[in-house]
Length: 329
Ligand code: TRP
Image (cartoon, rainbow, N blue to C red; front, side, top):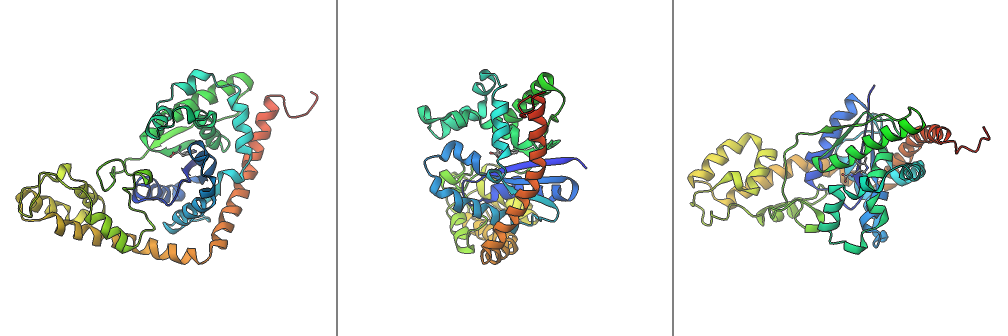
């Protein structure tokens, strides 16, 4: 069976963009592949190193999100990156063979530095982001990596690193392929990219009231000011959500928005009801899991042990090929 690996950075509770962009895809993959899904808490340090007090809490929140959507430890391996320290050792070994320009030209890292305004605070660890990500993947000899488009430059480096390692020391690693998921793009409620740091996201864990409030405040077509004004659903954030969470009614909503029959307030109320309905079971399960945090952590500890047994073996193979396994010949 082919292997799949994917990680989610632990920067806080996940939002509905993660749900439709990553988690729902993971649910399918756990049925068809030998899947490894993990919480990338070390990757969270690449930009959040000043706020490590958030790390433990964030980790638990992501655990709850992953389990509540239906990821099943019987079907996939769920683990925490920092609980498999072999990643960090292999990361160091790989960093020795990566030419500086490979990481310096990475557009996704450059974008992170710009968007987060890191400037001279951008760390050596952040520059190594794609090397750590490569380790996460190749230590399990994964064939496929489900990611969004923004992650493609990282995977390109991963394949280059694999070729370089295999060429220098011998065939060990598998060249991973991106598995691009065709998921609907969900902007934040203000129309910008959905993100926790922009405070424009709807969390999986939000209450119904919070969800409704956020949707009622969402930006719509700026030209539609009054109820009967003619709307342009194709440029409307709320309509983007309707297409994902209220597919059945979206054609009718489009027609009525364009004709001026449907106002934004009514449209938003319909969306809020649908979205809350589709998140109802996940949220109920999340509350239930929240009552047994110990059990939730136990699931990830068990998964980390399983992951670790594979990672250890690969690291040993890599060290042996590199002749740093402590044996005299
Ligand atoms: N860089 C990924 C993201 O931000 C997270 C990640 C870390 C990852 N390691 C990975 C994804 C390995 C896939 C495979 O979304």
